[in-house]
Image (cartoon, rainbow, N blue to C red; front, side, top):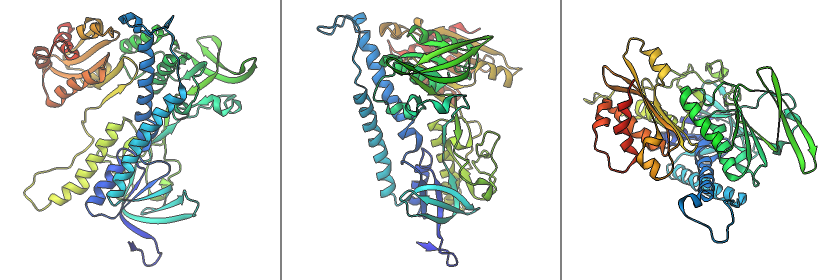
Amino acid sequence: MSYNSSSGVVKYDAIVIGSGQSGTPLALAFAKAERKTALIESTHIGGCCINVGCTPTKTLIASGKIAYHSRRAAEFGVHHPGAQDSSVKIDMEKVRQRKRAIVESFRGGSEGRLQAGGVEVIFGNAAFDSPKSIRIDMNDGSGSRVISGAQIFVNTGERPVIPDLPGLPDVPKDLVLDSTSIQELDVVPRHLIVLGGGYIGLEFAQLFRRLGSDVTVVQRSSQLLTREDPEVAACLQDILVEDGIRVLTGANAQSVRIEEMSDGVSITLEVKSTSETTPIKGSHLLLAAGRRPNTDMLNLETAGITTTSRGHIWVNEYLQTTGEEVFALGDVKGGPAFTHISYDDFRILEHNLLTLPAAKGSSSTVTRKSTKGRIVPYVCYTDPQMAHVGLHEKEARSLHPEANIKIASMPMGWVARALEMDESRGMMKAVVDEDSKLILGFTCLGVEGGEVMAIVQTAMMAGLPYTKLREAVWAHPSLAESLNNLWGNLK
């Protein structure tokens, strides 16, 4: 180790705060390049995605899908011996244990790679002590220590927002859930009230409906998934309602209270829509009304780091903050808040800070990478999946007012493979520039929508016109075949 002789502060070439899906590989890349590297983590290696985000939620959703198909078995001519109806028994402790085992496996893999890669991992809470030094309150109770770094990388992510809702502090903590705590339930809620109709809220709403809960979704906006085109959001809402979920849009939560009932404590959420206030009674309340960046504890002003009005760290297209040699990656810098974007942030910094300097003096024509112009795909893991890439119709018309914008859409009921699986709910929609034939955006609300979307994304990345997909020879019967027919509905 090298020390600052005047202060005894350990000096590093790189300090990474947060072991999310960009922080962990970046720390490994710096260590591999023989840079002295420290990775500071407050809780678990792997960040949100592995521990409380993508990995565990999609594992739970898989259990929900099995329950859903078990109830539908008779529709396919499959019967359980002795079963008189379509009911299924849910072992919530087993569901939770399966989730925990997969999380521990993924986390253990990351921990092993860091150890083998020569990264010094420090568990504690970090904050800037000066523009180049970090104070760490150690998790082991040993007090605090200060380290300094030539380059510092912030990958601290976000956390659920707790709304300022009258009465909320009086509700027992085990009945008020967020996207993390709901994953540790060992019982199926009798009636789950979901406050928020975004991606997280809808995934959990459908999951627990399939596990046996009554579910009510309360959405302040006039539509679910406010980022999506209205007809796509409406189609998904119809699907959720068909599944037995009560959906209230244009509804504002006014207050919450608890009531003693014969079978235990009940939660009553007062909801106002138009001029009417309606009480909704439930057993549990899920707060899914947004997330906030983990920046308030970092003492960023000490390092001269600017944040946005919502508290995210401001960065330029090269992920540089306003602090000298301080960079931000992943959700902490603001949207789009997806694991794959976080990982691409890592690739940008690895290239610009490690690969590019190593190529200096050679005949290489390699240039800096940036976030500018990258195509953003994402998937909401409802069933069917809601997948999107590129521009939505409104965005395309706003950004390209002179372009000859055309829209193609069709129901999943026109897709042979979806009909064969009896999974034909949903729709597809594409936005194209008819003059250049380029695809500007695509949505698939359908079975394995994320995989279908990836085909269109590949075409967009390659600059292929939609006519290439229309004329392609796809295997029959496959979901990809839908891309032969979609474009015949351009308007």
